[in-house]
Image (cartoon, rainbow, N blue to C red; front, side):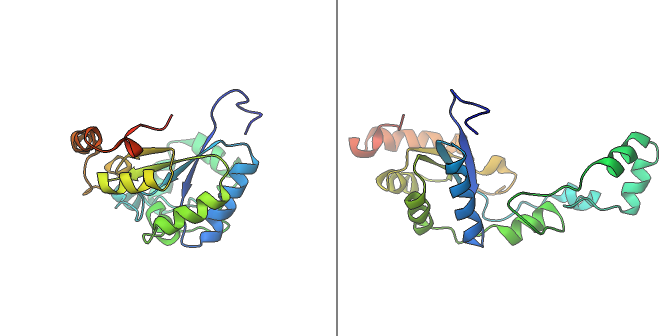
Length: 189
């Protein structure tokens, strides 16, 4: 990674998988590749409904369905791309199948905890930013645990459509932040 961006910041986004060894392996690979910040994502414990994917038969790897064929008939360039492009694969997942939502539900672990952060912190040499914090109490605990940054997020509402909207969390965050002891109230640089 350093070769592609030798003078800039290099962040790696990590999702915690049910098979923790996948996440640990990704963490080690990211550190070895020169990433300096781990963007630890906790706001995707389950997949969103992804109704459009289901309706259109979108799957990984892509599969030919009657609907796909009908849509492709007037697009001969699509057939050329489909027949000449290598199969879609993920470096970190050796087997896939089904919709993106099914893949996420099978891969992600909704039981992520502070213990997971402790394990990852033990193997990560750089900065850690937690993405997906939903309340001030969790933010305070994460700061006390030594994270370098926090992102209020509900994954754009696409994964957690009933979660608090970060923009609406911000006034509560700022009010609490202003009256909290200095030990955690200064943002990480």
